[in-house]
Image (cartoon, rainbow, N blue to C red):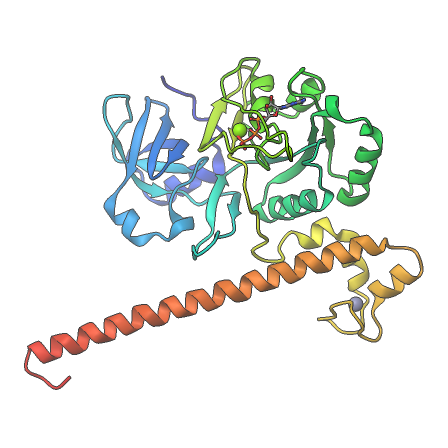
Length: 359
Ligand SMILES: Nc1nc2c(ncn2[C@@H]2O[C@H](COP(=O)(O)OP(=O)(O)OP(=O)(O)O)[C@@H](O)[C@H]2O)c(=O)[nH]1
Ligand SMILES: [Mg+2]
Ligand SMILES: [Zn+2]
């Protein structure tokens, strides 16, 4: 199978990077899938498996490694029978990352070079406005545009009220109401997708991302799975990220449900909480936390009934979370750097001893 690069979303932003590197004939490809370090790449001349050049693996940190959606340069033409070698990752236009989970130090690339990201939320037990805000903050921070899909409308008795509630929190971000299982509302979502555009779906497990992808494709290509009856949670059916080409053009990226989507910094919060941020610009202190500081314009707006107290509460909570992450993350990086330095130091002392010098 071979692809038109423009159909895969290739454009001047990436082309310029190739020209800058010289006129050497290069095989450009897009990473279509990634699973535990094994890649699938799509190029004009063919498609097939790929792996990283050893140098890349050694030099790059986690976010420097290619993720699904990345444009890469290969050593040779890919094909089903051979494993192509990825030599270089082109700079990204957008990148959606997940904060490092548990003990990991680095953020993980979820989707690279996507233009539009749908935050999918079920209108069942999954429904949670705060989670939608959190997703939107991360999507804005990625450089992509967000939109919201409220799925499973068929099992919700108060769709209009829920939509109104979400509307109050997302400003002018588009909201789509769907029932992926029955194909309702899908045409409006499909209308947002066109040739050359890459669209990702994110959201908790069981929200119906894969069911939506299937409905958009018009065929059951992605496996889907039942949610637990007890609490409506999904069972993490999708285990790896995969690009699929829409019959009418455009690319969809289905992602596994994320157990934790942390805010890694406050990028994006300013956009989601534009109403809060606009007032905060008038606080007396620039680093005002809007708690009990004198001259706080945000608190004043709440007191005057111009800003919902809930908005401020959500904003403060997310900002504290971002701060905590940054602090934890920095501390971890510092510890790691100290360890690496210690190891180098020990090694140098050991070498000096071997050479008969003083340690
Ligand atoms: N009633 C109803 N059920 C739906 C709808 N969309 C999806 N489902 C069901 O919800 C369950 C989970 O759907 P999936 O598409 O597998 O969910 P997912 O978001 O891809 O989940 P992960 O891959 O685990 O992240 C399945 O049983 C679907 O049939 C819908 O619109 N209405
Ligand atoms: Mg899925
Ligand atoms: Zn303030």
